[in-house]
Amino acid sequence: MNKLLGTMAAVLLSSIAFIPAAQAYEGFNGPLGVLTSEKQAMQGYTLIAPQQAKTTYLIDMTGNVVQEWKSEYGCFFAMLDPKTGNLLRHAVAPSGLVPFGGQAGIIEEFDWTGKKIWEYNTVKPGVELAHHTFNVMPNGNLLMLFWKYHSYDEAIAKGMNPDKPGRMLFPNGIKVGAKGERVKGIWVDVIREIERGTGKTVWEWDVWDHIGTNPDQLDINVFCTAKINRGYAGPDWTHFNGLSYNPENNEICFTSRQLSEVYFIDYGKDGGIKFRWGNPANYGQGKAPAGYCDDGDQKLFGPHACVWTKEGTITIFDNGNNRPSGNYSRAVEINREGKLLREWKASMSGSSDWNFYTAFQGGLQKLDNGNYLVTSSNTGHIVEVTPENRIVWEFINPMGKDDKVYSSASNEGFTQQFSVHKAWRYAANSPELKGKDLSIKHTLMPEGTPNWLELLKAGVDGPVAPALLKNDKK
Image (tube, rainbow, N blue to C red):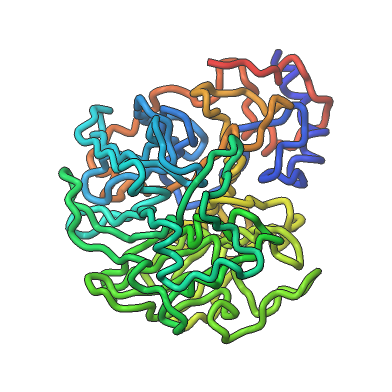
């Protein structure tokens, strides 16, 4: 066995770095788990919440589990509370409301021992549903995203032009999603602060109140054409997906996948948009893309995960979906005026840009040491990148939505099976982990799995041993 292990990896080493991981894991057998962990990485613990899975994991730098939490529901997004270290989790409601990407609906809070101490179900059939991510406010409340229903007739009264070419809104609704569910009306986004423990609404900012044709408003007749993406022109018109609060300036930033922009608004007020960046053609101040390889003045394509940094800048995960010059994802950091300060894409680390691409979802965290932790969601591919574009930590999620841990990737269908919306890295001395037991509870990978981290670090030539790559599960 040891001799066999020592002769592995030549084929894998020559192919892993060039697999378009966010599309699919192309090899029939391939390594999963932590593949790179160097000293330049920010040392700490990484929270991995596999989507649709019922277990959430906190792992160390080499992939050992130091804590895990189990729920009765599948997951969309999770994070640790900044003050208590409790796990806050946006679970997927068993009975959803609309078949849009990002629906969740149930907020759960677990203490460090795994005991659930709060649950809040946001689902109101035919009315509203919480979706995507949330932000913990300084007072402990949650800043959340909701979809809110308005009828087709209400949209007409609001100024919607039903005859605009490409618009996919109809009086009798439209079939959406893989199951072809019929959705009626238009579901607009609401940013809402809810009281922790009760779910009581404290404050909200409703897109419906800010529809118009001025740059500080959202034009209901501006949408991504159905020629590019049919879903973008339908009832999920704005599709906000990430938000972040900046206490220094009392501002909220949020991203829209459908409109390909990031926005700033004042928290606690009902004013309009203060600043927007990413797609100036939406408000008549830039050139729209014009076909093959012409991105126009558009900078973002289906973005996610905007976050205020401690320096007062904003990081954004730019998916690159439907980018005329090519589909690839990148990490972006801008200042308050929209100046690009930094970006990272796979070609900057010696690979091909399409090697790191997720059409939907995605995460970005700027770490305390200046590195980026970047999540390509659809196949759970996570990398930590230095300012010099060196990849110093790499992880491919082995935890499937069936709550089983796989020893290797296979042709069983990798895409979406191992999705992670966003990973988080926490330093050992962070407030979230202060006083917590961080001893190793068990290894993440199944017993008998090759130690991919050590094998890939060694770069030993030799044949792949299929017997050691079989899809053992636990």
